[in-house]
Structures are given as structure tokens and as C-alpha cells.
Image: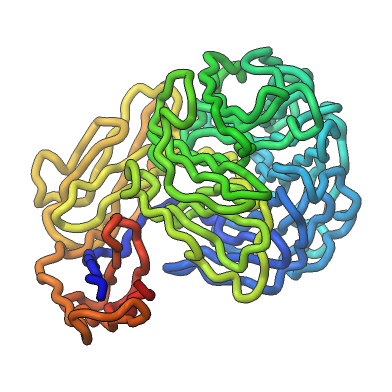
Length: 506
């Protein structure tokens, strides 16, 4: 006989995201898709996209699909090829084949940047979403930016919160190119930073990803050259577009570092190691790190054959693709260190469709609005607020938490404050920023849930079992707004449900 050790935790399913709706619909892999507009991601099977790697999708501010692309074709919201939307110069085997950004001061126009496979070109096209009766039309296509590049392509906001930087990397070199998008289009002449390790050698050096931290001040890159795979971290100046201060990790062995993503709070970095013959590892790194070996710096969360992209979703989780998988894997609590981040395999079923290596990149949207995010929503918690879109200089900031019962703490002048709400309920939290005599105000409803006061219990139908047996366990004590997290003895999250759990074979 074997003893089964099971623990569970009663939790609230509460996560707050604002201004994320443009990223709520994903299409990727072989006709796979996800809708993040509900409380949990819903599988979509109506997409036309069939690609091996990079892709991009974009929705409107309400989370309704606008269009999506594999870097070669753009499909509109009706899943038809957009007018003039074929023949783009991306590639189905390019790591970051496409990325979508908004056009500053024009909510009808979007840029679609594409990068071809190994030592191809970076180009851009422009979509007018009001064209073709509101289905969208490509009005400019395949405008050349840079030749002989790696497969890296990413973007972040300028320090003014309005303009956008797009970053590419020259092949067989250590040159980063940064193009600035303003209301007048793409500025003449990129900012070139020659920095870090040269990605030179055989063609496989051009694969890998580039990602910015949420605040855009840190750039992470996975890459490969004749000496093997490596990861580099850089500082990024959002005002000038310059890249500096490389920190490098090596020691990936037979793995090629492929996917990369930051935790929402920017303190942790996740990396997937690609291996098509053996399992590659999924790593978590604390930031900042100093140069060295990945084996000395990282926590290994798990391992998979042909692990692909890592992508933060609007539900606050990071998802991981795997070539040939009918599920996406997830990191459920990406702000938590070590195994507490809860790396979970087979987390979201794709309803018979298949993932490959790519997931849609985050869409960088230009905005003059003040937007913020919040975390921790139980009445017993201290809720943290973080400015999202206003990261530049300011004269003064004032927060009003709509909680007069909290006394003097109802008002804060901290940029990223904490507040303990006096009781459960809905609060219209307001933030106002003053700059050069001009003020901007943004208000968002925040829901605070009752604290957990009941002590959950569980009953098993067997106290002991043989090697091939299972145990059915029923947990009670939760309210309608609560669910149960079930963990094994290593604190890995096995399942989340409403209180019924069947153990796997021992």
C-alpha cells in the first residue's frame, strides 16, 4: 500500500486587469484559439490561422476581435482574408513573425510588423480598420525597414506613454534597431545600439525571442550562436531608444532558449528551453541577475519536449505552448517565487485543435488615458495599485480610493500606493496626475471580496489504497464565489475546482 498526501487551499478567483481587452482573443498554432473575456479562457475553434511559430491577434477596447495574422495573411473578424491582406513578408517558421501596434492619435489605423525566417527582412504594413465596411483593409503593405535580420521583433511604449518603439535585431551582429512610431508614422532613421553578444554562425542562431518588461525599462533576449544558447538582459531607455548594460547567462547545454516572459510585477523572468529530441526545461529567474550559468541562477519548474513560447495573458497567468499539444500549459501565479508560481501542465484544453511553438504577442497600444492595475482583493488584504500607462515625469499624483471610512488613508500621493479597504464592496477608485498645470483623471471600479472566514474540510472515500487505486475526495466550506486549489506533496497545483477531486494512480 501507499499513503496519499493531499492538501488543498481555499482561494478567491480574483484578478484585476484594466486596459487589457485588446489582447483578449488569441489565434495560434493549427486552428487553435482562446477567448479571455470570461472568468476563465474559452477555447475557440473557428480560426483560419495555421502556423508553426509567430502570430498576432488584436481586439477592440471591449475585447471583440478585430483581426489576426501569421505574418503572411491577415484575417478579419469574420475569419475571411482581409482586403489586400495576403502576401505579407512574414514566415510560418519565424519565431516572432508578426506584431501589431496602434497608430498614435488614430484609433482606426494599426501597424502590422513582420519578420521573415532566418536572415530575412523586417517590414511593416498598415491596416485601416474602417475599410471594407468595417472589416478592415490593408492600405500599405510590406514597407521595408531592415534586411538580413534575426527572428526577433518586439515593441514597447515611449516614456511619453503615447509613441511606440519597435525593436529588431540584425543577423550576424550585435546590432539592435529601434524605430519610433509617432502620430506622423515611423520616424526617419532607427536608433542603433551595438551591444551584447553577436548572434553569428549557423542559421539556427537567428531563432529566439525578445520581450520587454511591463514598464518597458528592461529588454530580455533568448538567442543562440556557435558557442551555444544564451540569455541576455538589457536596460532600455524609453526616451532615447538606446539599449545598454548587457547581463548574460549561458549553460543551456543541448537546449536552445526559445520563449521568454516577465512576471506582471517585473521581478521574475521565465524562459523555455527548446529541445526536439529530449525534454527542455522551464526556468524561473529572479531579477536582476548577474552573468553566469543558468543552472546556478534559475529554479527549474518542469520540462517538456519541444516547449515553445511563453506569453502573459490578460487573466494574469503566463501560458506556454508545446508543438503538437492539444493543451496549453500555464504559470498560474507568476509573481510568486519558486514552485509557488504553480507551473501546471495541460492547463487549458484546445478542444481538439493543436498548439505549435508560437503564441500571439502582446499588442502595444498608444493611449493618452491614465490606466492602472491592482492586485489582492480580499477584505483582509492590502490592495496594491500600479500605474500602467503613465510612467514619465509628473508634478503630482492623487489617488482617491472611494473609501471614506478608512479615514486619512483614503487619499494617497504615492505613485504606486497600497490601500486596505474598510469593508467588502465595490469602490470607484480614481487617480489624477498633474503635469505642467494640466491634469488627467481615470476612474475604475474595484471589487473587494469578503475575507475567508470558514474553515474548509474534506472527506475521502478511502483511507488507504493499493498502487492502482484512486481516492475520491469531497471538500466543503466554500461559498459560491470561492474555489479549491488541490496540491500534491511538492506544492505543485494539480487541479482547481468546486470541491470534488479524484486522485491519480499512485
